[in-house]
Length: 159
Length: 104
Image 1 (cartoon, one colour):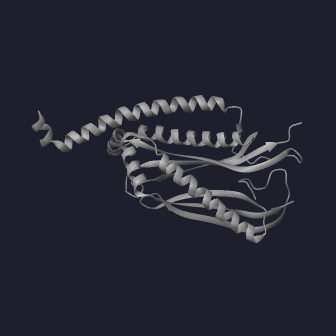
Image 2 (image 1 turned 45 degrees about the vertical axis):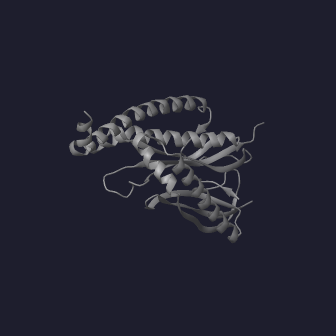
Image 3 (image 1 turned 135 degrees about the vertical axis):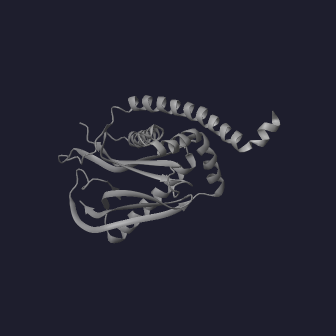
């Protein structure tokens, strides 16, 4: 048994990493989605629009820039899946959830910062995505994704 | 210094334009963090080290931009945009630009 493992060490390592990546990745993703949905409900009252707001005079007390970002990486198993996907083409589900998660997380962080500073709404939301990390410059590989959300938080004059 | 990413400062009037101001920074994290990020890459999840690195350097880019605006005599920067690019392994360039203005 031990000899077999030693002889096929590469294959064994690959298998181990795939299983490890699959289990940890799935658990982490589920947990992350749960927390995202919970916090999105919490912050629903803070309005975010991606249009430039036009405000009447005397309505706005203060305005400032807020931003939030998140770097999230895929697990080993999903990266293998994505490489296989490259052969057949089609939707790469493994990356869809990765990007979705990091964008929503970035928006949530931005909202949290705005709420902590007492803002009533955020106007002109912009989203930016980039790939960073060690695999960023290699062809056909997405190592990890950074999503950045930024906007202008507005504090109103409440009467 | 008022910073916004809309074309004006809400509730205030722009009295003078000073043109484009920009700030950028290239940062790398020490090798330990890179190693940890590589390990984290196996299981997936958030890479806190990189998030921190990017937030820090973005703040620095914004600081440099406001410093430039201050030298012009502006008191606000409007229409700010961010951009990111990776120049080398583990290093990222963060770039912020906007229009320096003076508001009432």
